[in-house]
Amino acid sequence: MENGNNFNESLIQAVDAKAQWYDMEELPRILDNYRLLHTCIKVVFDFLVKKALITPDPYKLDKKISDIKSPDSVQFVENERSVVMGQRFSDYESTLDFLCNYYKFSVSQLSLSNIKKLVDLNNSISWNSFSANSNKVNTRVLATMVFSARQNSDALTSSMINDNLSKASQAQNEINSALKEYTDFQKEWYKAQIRKTVILSANFDGNKAYADPASELQQIKKNFAAGMGKVPFYNELVDEIIQEDQGEKKNELQKRLLAKLNVSSEADKKVEKRIDTKALIMGALQVLGSTPSQIVAIAQKIQENHDVLESEHNSFMDKLKRALRKAFGIAEKPLFYNIIIVDQTTGAKRTEKLNYQTFMTDLATKSRRYASVAQPNSPGYKKIMSMPEEKIAEFVSAQITDCNRLMVHLNSLDDYFKSAAAPANKSKIKGLKIDITTLKNSIVKANQQRVEYTSYIEEEAQMKRLGISG
Image (cartoon, rainbow, N blue to C red; front, side):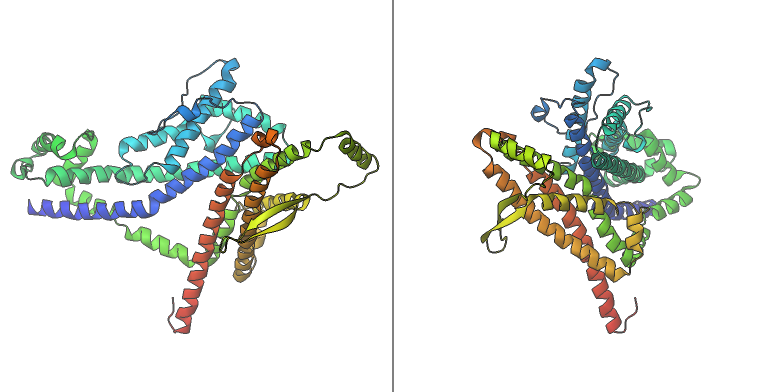
């Protein structure tokens, strides 16, 4: 009985430590991958809407999402494809939005039953096997739509869609792999809660329970509801508890279980990872590699807003001037927008002339540059990886500084479009704030990795100055 209590207490301590590791380290990583997946599928969704292949759900904003729910997956008739897939894709996106912004990724919240809901959601659209030959209705139909729309798009848009599909596939694989390991842990968490609230409770008769396996099962069932509330009773997991307590190989099972729950190996991996400083700074660059789709989406909205303003200058003389320039091969005159820049520190305002053509060219250049380093096996990534580490750090710092300048111009440009449009056209202006926030989050994340890299390098240099080897 005493040895049994010692094992219970050791196991509960090990499970609690592992739970803390999941709450602090692993579950936030799963959430990050869901956020990446959400960002990618929003781009695909907007792309299909723009191509008029799906019809957005008109009741989307009226639906209140309060739980993880997978979209419908039953077969439908072909002539309903646009409306049905619009509704299903909207439901799927809304659930991901709920997960990313409102759901608490914690061991206490993410139970076995909730893991099943996540797995069902992940399986509802297989981004990691996105094929027109898929045996899953939603995946097959969406893949057919995307492939068709992509063939009738320009090279930059096609590249953007391919990039987002690739990242969605990668994110889904990471999520599925992490959830598989986490499911194993949740089973041990469930068993540990039974030990804590049932077996170690005052009402549990240990003398009767440990007489034989059947008696322990009887005692657990008798006290289960009082200790575990409305949590389901999983027979196979309760059987594992009994085997660990009274089975022929109980000593081996107990030892193996405590070793499996040890978090020191996970901490060791983390330390090893931090030592690879070059990988750390390249990781910051790869975060920037996730931004091309965001930049392209912003550029498209800017172009559309620009077209709205230009449509206000469409008199006979405007048309004649454009025709003459085209006939004689005269280049378009540079277009400048007088935007207002606000100093975030002092609040002071100043006017700056922004060359529209140059700004759009810079956006396209940034998109191509960051797309070229998105994947570790890409030529762009390998080229930068071959540079000395300090040169890579300088390059990344320069890019982050440049991106921060871009954010200032984008915010000012958003305000300019909203104020410059004629009253009749204001509803046609597309706001940039949400897209700017998404891009800003990526830049902040890249900068955090750059700062972590810099801190580690400075700490290493300090240790060397003190004569301490790492």
